[in-house]
Length: 304
View 1: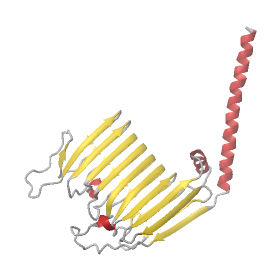
View 2 (view 1 turned 90 degrees about the horizontal axis):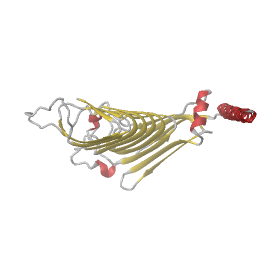
View 3 (view 1 turned 90 degrees about the vertical axis):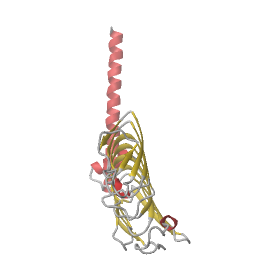
View 4 (view 1 turned 135 degrees about the horizontal axis):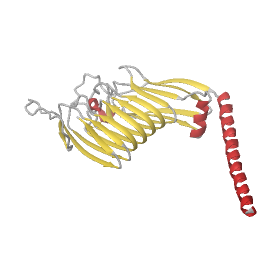
């Protein structure tokens, strides 16, 4: 019995030591975060990029204009911050506004023009530390990083976007997009197309995981091909808006819930739902949306 009491005492002391060690480590980490808050070097950055586009005026016949041949390519890779991306009024230059601690975050950008009139703009924003330290710094009053990107609306461009470990809002309404490729991870994101694009986008691709994503009025982009993949989170996909052409739509989801809101005045193929039907006697046949869907360990809810 005495031997058992001795080992029980040793076990309790060991557990107490582990708890005290954890408290000590937590105190050290918190102290380091508080120290870093006091050492912040806050940058308020505004930069503009003049785009040299060879595309003719917006009145040119779109049937004769191959915008993809002269389009720009915007590549944004943004992590651990709050992000906003939206369109500018016609005639304004691409602009970036950012607020962040230079000791903990880095922003780099570049613009290259090709001889054929095409151009490529790259923007990267990232943190040099850990997620835990970044969260603790903000908890103790540190500067919350924020990046706003304002894109020209009167120049054709393809958009490649990677957003991770943060929150973001994209307002693409009214832009001139030839292709969109979105990768969204570990955060909450909202994508709005609140007004029709200048011309229908050829391909719209979205891939998301470990977070939540809400997409509104995507029909205003009228993509000819739409690919959506979402894992381990919640997705609300609203396809309402002004559809101008047929579309092939592929939706794959797993380990989460997906809500799909359907547009009216279109023909739906590939979905089994007890909803509306597009008018069959119209002089101009309505656009046809052809769906393929796949769900695993989750649910797809269809709202007509």
